[in-house]
Image (cartoon, rainbow, N blue to C red; front, side, top):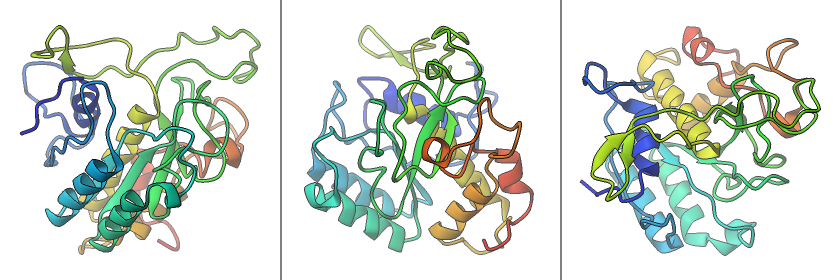
Length: 265
């Protein structure tokens, strides 16, 4: 079991699959899911393309149904040509049947960051508690879905000009906290597309486990189709008018995703 020295990965894993009845607190979206913990970043949140690609392959070889990539490369990485090993590993994982989900990035602007922008990846932006686009969520090419990630909305969105409209609520989840990261706590500052990607990964697992796409393990493209086809994008379903550049297919809806198979999926 890799030791988490930052808390970020455990927060993400908790959102996906924290167990019920643990006498600690919150629960994850799929509390009976099994986590394959793979640490590819250091205590400061940095890592190499080599380590990341090895981690993806490690998870895929062990039968992971969903692989969550809650991190982003810097702006200099704007194509698979600059992280060939990572994109090759993602392709390998997809061939093995894994749904790959990644954070779109938290630096505003277009397009989404890599690896979210890579082929075979569900790129996820984030929304606020009011279902508005968060102020620093990346948008544009490569954005497939949005999901709750906390924070404040963009200035002028949600029908308000006040940048403090909404409280900027974070995503609460149990994780390790300092000093030493040896005890569980509830740090109140976790917000970002990492948290949004965790929600999509959790619901992807729900779709697979529910059998809504049939009794056999569905191919990744079918799971993505189901998530996108059931996302919220209609009038009144978001905190601001729907725009595919900002919201991709729309806002993740877990109940719809496991309710019935969407046409074409």
